[in-house]
Structures are given as C-alpha cells and as structure tokens.
Image 1 (spheres, chains in turn orange, brown):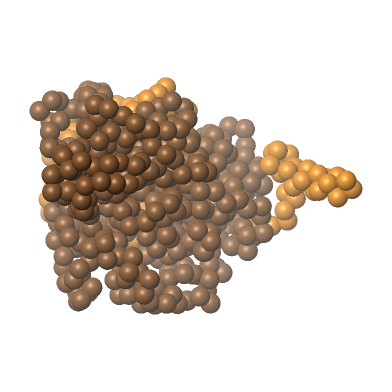
Image 2: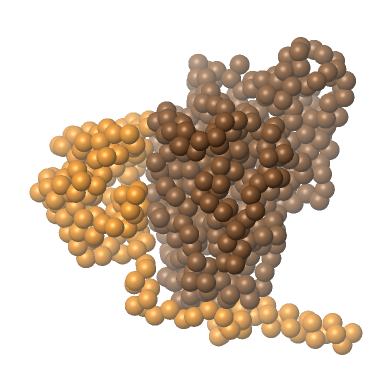
Length: 189
Length: 425
C-alpha cells in the first residue's frame, strides 16, 4: 500500500508539466535557446512573409543565376527541362487556370509568393541546397514571378515587396483557410 | 505523384550502374530468402543501424521494389511477403524528396522548439531518451499510395502490383517521446494554433500540423520495431503523426516552430494539393487523416492460386480515424460480402491483419476487401470515390492521377488460378 501511494506521488510530479503548469520543467533536460541561436537556424517563412530576411533582387539578376544553377533541370527560362516546369503564361500574360495536375509545379499555381522564397531557400538547387544567398533567392523568385507574368521585369523583390505580390491563383484552394478539425465526414474528402 | 517516364529512365540507368544488383531485383517472392542472408549492419558504434556501403545499402533496398529520380527515392514495401501487422524496419517504404540520405551524427543532433513558447528549448538525443517514452503501433502511408496512375506503370524493378500500387504503406512499433511532453516543457503560448517543423535532410523537408493534433497523439520517435530508427527512415529522430498522410511524419527532425497560422510549406501546399473537378477545378489541400482502407495481399496479382480448394485470403486494413471495426470480403466482385477474421489485438491507426477462409471452385472470381472503421466510416469503391471527386464516367475506366486514394482493390482470379489487377478492367 505504501508502495502504491509513493508511486502515485511520483506519477503526480511527473504529470505536472503535462498539465501545462507554468513552472520550471520537472524533467531537468533541454537547454534554453537564446534569440541569437534561434535566428541562426530559423528560416521558416509564413504566408505573410514577416519572417523574410534582408536582401533584394530583380528578374534581371535572377536570369543570370537561373541559367547557371537551375536551367539544367528546369530548362531555359523554367519553361521545359527534365524536372518540373516552373513557368506557365509569359511576361505580361499570367496563366489564370484552370490548372491541371501537371501545372502544379509552376509558380503561377502558388497562392503566396513567399512559398517560392521559402522552398528555393531551403531545398534548391537539388545538388547543393542552402547554397544560395538571400539576394540570390530574392532574384530567382523575381525572375520566376516575371517569367510567369506576375510582376514586371524591373520590380525589386525584398522583404517588403514580395509578400505584397498578388498571386493569380490565390483563391484556387479549398478550404480557403485550412482549419482543424476539418469539415465533417467523409474523411476521404 | 511526381513519377514520370524520366524517373523510370533515370532508375534504369541507376540500376545498370549497380551491376548484378538489378538482375532479379523486385522479384518479391525471392525477397525473404535473400533478406535473411543480407550483409551485417555496420556503424553500430554510432548507434545507427545501416548497411556497410552505399551500394550494399541500395542493393538490398532494391529488392523491395524501387524507383528513383534526381529529386526522389522510392522503395515499396513488399506487402505480399510478410504476415502479421509489423513491417520489418528494413522493408518500410521510403518516399524521399532529396538526392541522398543524410549522414547525421546523433551525438551532435539537436531538436529545437521555439516560436510561440515561453521557454525555447534545445534537446540532445540523450535528453530525449531521458524523457517519458511511449511505444505504439501505427501505420505510416504516403499520401500518393495506391494512386490510380501507378497501375499501368509497374515494371520488374518495382515488384508485384500489391507492392508498387499499395506498398507505400507500412506499420511499425514506434518508440519515442509524446510531442505534448516537449511542447508542455517549452510552454505553448495562448495564441498558438499550428506547428511548422523541418528535418535536417539536404532539402530541409518542412511541414505543418495543427496544434490540437500535436497535443493529441503525435510523437518524436527514435525507435522502430525495437531498434534505432534507420537512416532511410529518419535517423536519429522523426515525427510520427498517427493516421495522417505520410508527409507529416518528417524525418531527421530538427526544428519545431510554434506558430499561429498554417505556413503552407511547398511540399504540402503545392506538391501535395490536388486539382478536383467537383470543386470547380480548384485544389483540395490539407487532407490530414487517411480514410478507412484495406487491400488483400494474398492472393494478389502475380501470385497464382495453385489449385481448387482451400485458399486463405489475407491482407491488411487500416484507418486514420481509429481502429478497424470490421473487414468484409467479397469473392464475386462485390455482390455478396462475408466478414473476415481480424488478428487481435487491433491497434488504433495501425495495420490490422485480416484472414478469410475460402474454397475456390476453379471458376472466375473477383476478390475485394472493404474496411469499416470504429467511427462507422466505410471504404469506398473506385466508382464511389471517383463519383465523389467529380471524375466522369468516361474517365472511370482508365487510371487517373489522384492522391489520398483509399478505394477497394479488386483482384481477378482466372480459371487457371492466375490472379490479375482488376482496378481498371
């Protein structure tokens, strides 16, 4: 009996953090992170782009980088190539859908321009992800937005201008704002 | 699915480079025998279970049925080759979106939790292993598994149809720390509602998850079937999000950021959204959990029935909503149904083994399994699912690109006992 009482007491102590009590964690593991440390690894960019870092670029800058780093897979101007056609439409003439499934690789499909920045920054180019500077990422995003007819060739993309770009397929997703729990059944919706 | 003719060509080049390995690769029936004599695993000192060389590593995995491209590596689980519900870790499917698997030093690896929390924290692997652990049996399934498109894309390297059509689903006993424990240690702020998290793979694969799911049953796993999570499965840690589409289960997990809106990462928002006729050609995104699903693994296409008489029909059923409640079997294409036996215990959001005793009379037959989960949700037929998605009658008869596909799989048994994929005629 004494044994189970003490077990119960331990269980209650262990359960304290799980109840979300605002006290120092009982497990005594984990190292506090400073804001500087967080800054060094946090490049997750939300749809409104408040997290975008300093830097800038234009389509002209991007064209040069694209030819050197991206064309090998995505083709000239991102219009062909062996992997993922990135461009639909043309400068001044954005593609407005409807999209078929093979069109999803185009930047014209994205609801937010910030998605292109986040993904290129983290995952491109495939042989050496993370090797692009912030200016280069802004430039490539500017180039792809220009080739997709979404911005002008001279438009400067930076932390302020990029989130303001109006994407033609912004309203092309259901539900418009993802919610959880989702709509009622069936679950295979 | 992002598989293309190009991907297959790349794959063939790749296999040619691995001389001798490609020969007979994907001959699923031979797998088990070969697997038992697979090379010993090295690098034990680092705690990682891995193969001795890259070639041996790939060579072994190729027997699982494989497909590769510049930007993805796919291995299919040979569902026809094992019984029970646990997928051997080395046979767990892989759908990996980068050019190579990372070599991570577990001693240096950290998991951070930051964003809308009171105490941003960094955990070492030792830290994680000192925290309360749980072990639970759950399936993991790629969102693109069973895609109708793949039915006519198979080749000898990809194994039998049940393997390359449905084999991007596997089931393991995962061991790790409940994500809620870590989040509570960091202290989630009031206005938080979502997480965005990423791995330490070359492309830093990222994904989002609603906070409610994170606090419910998500876990940070370091163990799989009694051994460390393998390199191709996310060593040293991966996220496990029970019952939800595969991409949520981010491998090589490194950073978790608590936020107040979905971040629309490229993989989930773009690559994994699907254009649908029933919603005016708009795209459906954020599918979350898998619906009820099942597939007969034996007999299945390519596995002939040797003669009249007793045949055990067996397969796997699962649901992202909870436990499997029952599985019905039809041997006449869906006109009549009888209940199968379920192997117990039945785990929640886990593969569930079913068996059904059948006396084959030598006539033509169409075998189907149908899963009903504990919420009462019933696995649809292909026609029901396509009708629901607004796919036309004309399109019903041909493979159609789709993700999140959980329709029943028909297998046709011919007079001679041969078994064929009857999904599309």
